[in-house]
Image 1 (cartoon, rainbow, N blue to C red):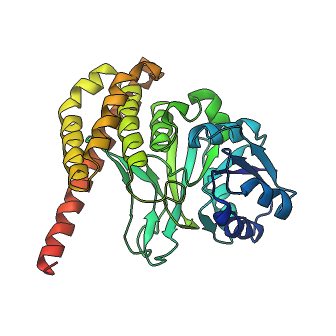
Image 2: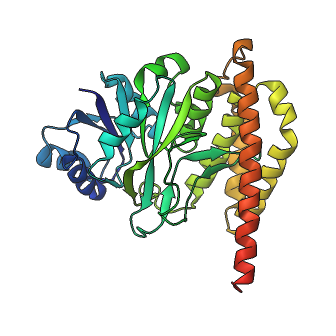
Length: 330
């Protein structure tokens, strides 16, 4: 057995059947499925017990969040690779086969992100991996673009943990998903940590997944998600950037937080965003900072350059899209 597919679930009974049916149709059968349930109250456990009695289910005694649930699954797994898969996904026939093939390309690859397509708008990309910028913004690469884009394998900043494969042995070296995050940005955090240690995160365009999006939280923006994401962005930068790098990036980071605050004020979530930032600053002591090691110095330099390049590329793309809308009279 090469891979364990870990599906974290919280009140997602209505998503589970299409997800599991798509896994049953895989061209590669060399995997097992482990559902980690965060104390669902919607009958998810009864459904799994009655409909899929052969699938292993780990029932937790309360909702510990995404990070804890997937860590539980990763530690229970005994396969070389683990796939983390959101319950609100439907995978294409060759998904597992392509993901395993992609991560085997090099022992330096920690994670591989799939090509996620919007379930309700199948002509549009949901994610082609994640990028991170000097502004402290995590960018969903390719979101809203035509599925005709992002056809080539590529290196990315981090894999989107909604449908990604990971080399299990590396977790023992760099640590697991940060449970302080509960949910949101935990995938960028661990991808960042892997890059510090010299590992790669890549993108596989041949592994296709259809994704509902925000299946558990319920919407793109809500109080819970905005507050948690704001708090976790503080954690992410504090933990992964050594003090000199934080000082170097303090102005773009401050600008990024200010712009985000204005954006969320416009959308009615300014107070939630502020509360998240304050909570992050007040609870930094719970974070385990990545210890600086001189042997990783050039990895930090490469990461800094990547942050700069991602920021520039995002700004240029944003400006191009604005001009296009203006010329179209939108």
